[in-house]
Amino acid sequence: MAAARKRTRSGIEDVRDRKAKVIKDSGEKRHIAALILARGGSKGIPLKNIKMLAGVPLIGWVLRAAVDSKQFDSVWVSTDHDDIEKVATAWGAQVHRRSPEVSKDSSSSLDTIQEFARLNPEVDVICHIQATSPCLHPFHLKEALEMITKQGFTSVFSVVRRHHFRWQEVKKGGSVATQPLNLDPSNRPRRQDWDGELCENGSFYFSTRALIEEGVLQGGKWAYYEMLPEYSVDIDVDIDWPVAEQRVLRFGYFGLDKPEVVRLLLCNVSGCLTDGRVLISVSGEEMVSVNTRDTMGIRMLQREGVEVILISSGEDPVTKALADNLSQRTGCEVRQLGKDIQGEVKAMMDDKDLDWKEVAYMGNDAPDVDCLNLAGLSAVPRDAPVVAINAAKYSCHSAAGLGAVREFSEHILLLKKKAKSQMEQDRIHRNTF
Image (cartoon, rainbow, N blue to C red; front, side):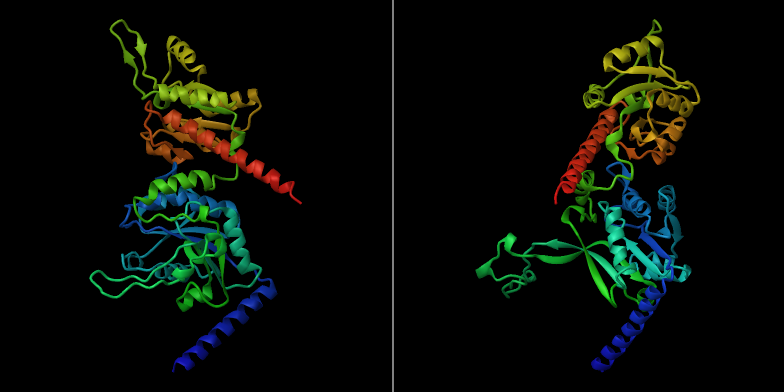
C-alpha cells in the first residue's frame, strides 16, 4: 500500500513538473501574487500585525519590500479585521476579506491561502510572505522568485543557517538520559569547522497554484533560499519586540529613496517641538515649554550638515517675540506659513534647489498631511491624531514636547549613517577584482 501511494505521488509530481515545463517553455505569462496573512485575533501580541515597530506598522515593513520589489502582479493582505484592512490599503495592498471559517484560532495558513486561491483563479503563483519578518528586502523576494520563474522550481521557501547543538527532550520526572541529536559530545566541532544546519525562518513560502490545490506549500521540485542571520527576524511574543526593533533599525529595508540625501528638516513648532500649549501670563506674555532633549537633537542634525527650519502655520501662529526667542534657543530660522503649507514649503524648496526626497518633515495634524506624504522622511509625535499618523513614514514613541524631535533627529542620523556605510561597502565591492 505504501509503495502504491509513493507511485501515485510520483505520478502526480511528474504531471505537475511537465505542466510547469510547458508553461516555462511556452513563455506564457503567469500571474504572480504576494499574499500576507494578517488575522486580527493574534493571541501573543494583540493586533501585532499593525503594532508600530521602529515607527512603521509591522505589516508595513513586508508590504514596502513586496511593492518596491516590482516582482508581483498583485500584492494582497488577507485579514478579518477593519483596522488591519485600513493599514494594508494605506501601504499599497489589495485586501482579501477572509471568511469566518478560516479566521479561527484553529485555522491554518494553508486553509486561508487555499481560500484566496479559489477566489482568485487568475493567480498562478502565490508568494506567502510572513508579516512578522520585518527585515525582508526586495532583493530577497526577487532572487527567490527567479528560482520559480527562471529555474523551474514549484516551491521555494526561506531558511537561515543555525549553529545550535540540539539534544533530545526528556519529560520532567523521567529517568531516561537525554541524547545528542546533531553532535558527538566527545568530538565537539568548532563553529568555523561546522557548516551548521538549515532551518526554516518563516519569512516566505512561494508555491504554484497546483501545489496549493493539492494541499501543500512545499513539494514537487522544491528549493530553499538562504537568508543571512541578520535578516532572519521573527516576532511571536512581547519579549521579541525590542530585539526586533533594534535589528530592523540596522538591517531593515527603508524604501527606494536613499535617506542620506536629506538636507533639510522642517519641523512644526506647535505640537512637535512644543506640546501645543501656549501659556499666557497675567500681563499678556506668551510662553511655551521647549524640551532640552529636542533642542539637542536639532543641534545634532546641524552638526551633520542638515539645516533645520521651524515652521508655524497660519492656523496656529507664533508671535514675533516668541519666534525670536525660539530662534535664539535652537539656532534655527522660524518661518510663519499661511494656509497653503504645501505650496509655501515647495517654494522654500525651490529657493534652496531641493527635491522632496531631500526633505524631512515633522508635523502633527491634518494640515501637514500633504507634506508628510511627499517628504522623503516624515514623522509625527506619538500623540498626533490618526490622520497624521497614517500619512507619516515614522511614528515617534515620544509625545510632542517630550523628546519627539530628538527621537526623529536620531532616526534621521541613523539612516544617514546606515546609508553611508552601505555606500562605502558598495565602493569596496566595485573596487574588488
